[in-house]
Image (tube, rainbow, N blue to C red; front, side):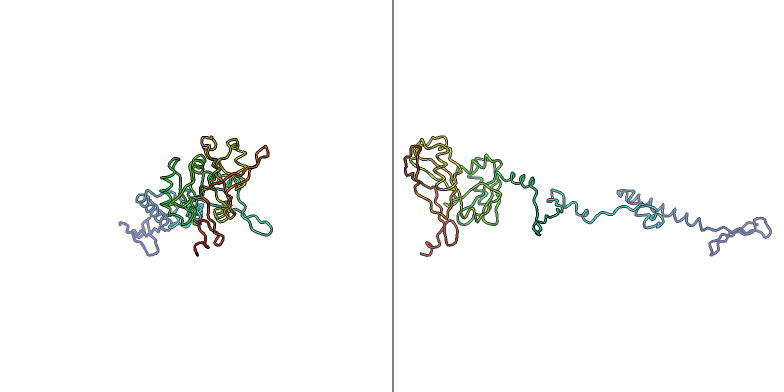
Length: 315
């Protein structure tokens, strides 16, 4: 008699033949085959995933499939390190998007927490601004676009400079070289709408209130100065009776204009400026040297500003 097959609810396959045959009743447990079938299903699913999303790295896909479907595999496989929280924003820290910073341990001096700056870095940054001029306009400060156009039109003899506006009411003009800066500095004076422009080289310790409101550079003339007194030491000595001499113009240096010597002097506007100074020559002779100013600043002692007099306005 032909054998018949029957699958009972317990998962056993029973083969029944004729009673008394050698085949008898055979029972087969499918427990191990069931696991193999499940593993095969997982493998097929994984292959389907790879075919659908081949752009994903195979290693990452294996990791995802086995983690979600085979806990036993997860225990044996080495876990991949998770990306740090800071690493999630590494793109924003690239130099084209800003400047990457790092923590620096502060220094404690006299029980105070102090940020100690790196000498080499500060010196390098100082060099980057050595070709810059501080520009201050007496009265109301002109707008940025107006100032930029002024620089382009009136200082076109040098390479195109950059213009920066500071909130305190002054400009920084960045030139392409120190030579360009000196060309503009020593070619003044300059005015905007008949208002004087005060310019001076940038310095690390520059402070608007203590420098532009007190000490400013102005051009000074010494008419009828004897021609044998036009040496650098003589001119420096005469100019020092007024302030700090900075520079003699080209005609004075080359002595191509002998009617007067012209010198750029940094003066203290809170002090009266003399109309003449006393000079002693090497023979012991004294003479009075007249002094003329291309522009004589008007300093208001009441409001501590240049360009007007509060007492005169009230009259």
